[in-house]
Structures are given as structure tokens and as C-alpha cells.
Length: 69
Image (cartoon, rainbow, N blue to C red; front, side, top):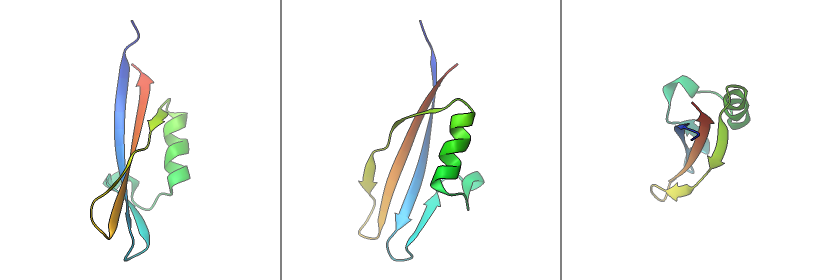
């Protein structure tokens, strides 16, 4: 049976500052496409991107990935 490894990244959009921020400090300053392309090169497959509202000012996107282990 195939076994999978999973990774979840959070990206927050702040409507007050009009900026996106990654929850993972190692990704600070990187664009969405840059992070997604890097993870794709590492074998990660994007499987879901649910969006949820933290507050009136903040909206989060969860990027869920999987890859065979």
C-alpha cells in the first residue's frame, strides 16, 4: 500500500496592510508561485487550498501537499 507524507502551509492576507505573509518564517519574503514551484521540485503535490477568515482584516489560505514517502 502506498504511504504518503503530508505538509500544510498557511498564508495570511491582511486587508489593512494589503500584504500576504507565510506562517513559516523560512518562507518570509517569498512569493506564492516561488514557494509552490520549489515544493513541486521537491516532489510535493498540492492537494487542497481551503480559505478561512480569521477576522475582518485577515484571511488565511491553507496549502495542503502530499508526496510518497
